[in-house]
Image 1: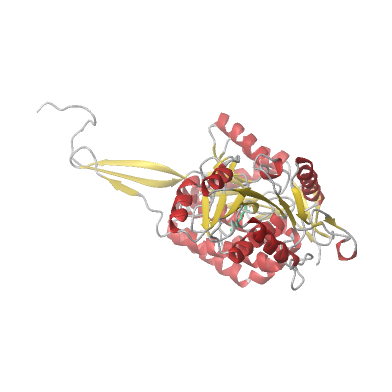
Image 2: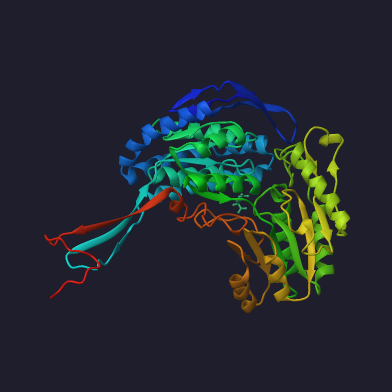
Length: 494
Ligand code: UN1
């Protein structure tokens, strides 16, 4: 690939920052781009541009704002293959999954464009005669979005599209590991005719760019997807400033396999959600809670299925598991393998970094299966973000639910069972924002709310119509057409 020197996109212009850093293809170690390492001054310029354009943008009728998103969706569709290949190059996920991610973005464009003709408010009966009460969604102003490397285009669309259709202007800090998707999406916005300054992209680190965004008084919302530690710091800083913050900070998602489960289906579900994207999804399955009656048979079938997982460069035909994002990611996974062994879990497969032959340059880790883990082990509690899954045996449905819920996160969960009563009981009792029945823990659709309970977030949701709640403020409006001053809540003498 021809190397790209990327620039920030501020006020509709492509501009350099003072410094740059290199970006590498995780499958080959090859340098693929240079990206700006921006400073606070670049954020200040982006926010000023956003502030100027937001006022005009908010006055554009929402159905017209939505027209731009239809164009964005169409352009993404035209460029789907091009975008998918670039996505595989910068992130490592296999091409089939890259296409899936780009499709999520396309779906989000058309879905949110539809919101331009809805953006429903409410009418409500007033307490007094000849008085009309209604509430409507109002844009908030300048909003900041901070997006991760594991879904560099889909998550950006979950956040920027609702913000834009609702009449806000956006300052976006993409992950430095995956800037090419941000550059491509900004170009698409430009080609679709989005007015200058409505979206601004500032590349750089969380420490500098992210921090400047969090502390900028003209930014009224921070929408963040990333690590728990960073998210909690952002929340604390935003709390002091009374700044609205929406957080999505990962999971420790489990598949429950009951004694009446279709085991082949459960194996397929676990393979796909634990090892797809090399386990680098917030929704990835990293625990399998298995009823002891089927544990042995389930493990035998899972080990057999894992043998078919070809590992390599996701651009090559037939590869099922791509690389890990970088050396630090790889080392974190290695550390958890050691922790798992020390804790007494039994390593049934994998557990090693792949080296030699076609693996000399990239960052590859074998799909790994631990068994006889207990719920309190660190490998069963902490997010590993790699292709590592631990089997936790249980004796009953009630214990399965308890183990599922016994972690600090609450993003996604899944149960494989044929029993309709257990299905509905699980739906009620599983303490996660997303629940699957007879499917793995990944693959959320964009028109449903995405997010989780407990340590996964702070109650907000990405995607779905609920995403609009992050980027709008409710305004209550009373119109009194009685011609006299009517005083609410005051008893009037007859
Ligand atoms: C993420 O890993 O943060 O549900 C996003 C899924 C995808 C999105 C994952 N649609 O697995």
